[in-house]
Image 1 (tube, helix red, strand yellow):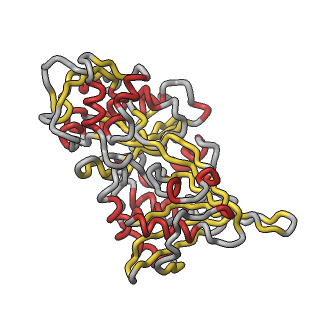
Image 2 (cartoon, helix red, strand yellow; image 1 turned 90 degrees about the horizontal axis):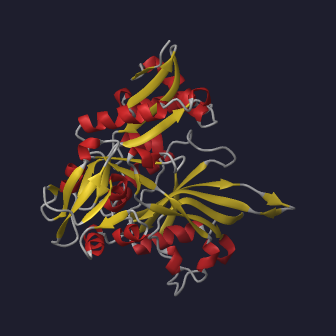
Image 3 (cartoon, helix red, strand yellow; image 1 turned 180 degrees about the vertical axis):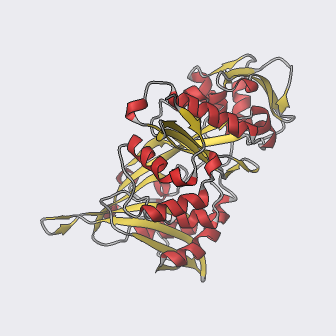
Length: 404
């Protein structure tokens, strides 16, 4: 029987998720019923494309219906996820066909952007996704943590229940989201079934803890973390694994991280998706002991280049023309004005680049001059790369605090 690609029925959802887990060498969690309930509350089945072979799911691609903070506001930006093909069906073009159908559908819905976290960074450039942000990987030595010019602890830290976190954390997050490019809007269902849920956790770590910081009696920061217990010859050598830590101000952020570095019975503080503009690097006495690494983070796709450019704000009143190549979504091919009067144009181009590289610039995460130096952007007019860099520049780099 030929492969069939379609949306799954509700009774097929469990087998679809099991197939996706198998594609990544994993399996469904033991509390799979809770996971299925959370998925049903947050992922419409018409956003899921599944390849079936004789009735059995063998590959999939899905997209959470979310919005993202972009320069100047926010925009629909489906969060692409669950992209996987079983080892028995790889190298047949199935992933390409799934991505083809997904992008066509997103375009038909009128959604200008799509974003993802790449399990393998080699895959998504061929579909027009560009690296749009980076994150730090923090693996800090806890004992050496000390702040420069430390004013001393401020505020009150409370450990709260998951239900309390569900009420206290979203207002803090939304205050940060309004100002920070790359953040996703979160519904209550998303908080309950995704961000605060425990069934997504990897094994080997303990339960989740939820901490809130109050300054003058008002919640201003929070942290979700786990602890990995480890004793070596009677000496505690555990790890604090930070899931998410956010503060509404420099002061609040400093205090929530002070708390995380104060937890006893641990030797390291680990955060896999650390804010590249976070204050710790410049706030601590010994930045080397933070052991910061660099990793790719959000990958962005301009599904409709014209619409995406029109809804973005720009730094300054300049404008220039880009000749855009897009082999996978040919409706984007052609010349587009960047900056004032953004949109389609017949004017001569100042720069030429692939749609993936335009996506890398879109959120302000990469610099046009750096892309030019790397041979990813061609200048047709002298000085155009620097002008483009100025137009796309944002006060802070984009950051998304969760992997989806």
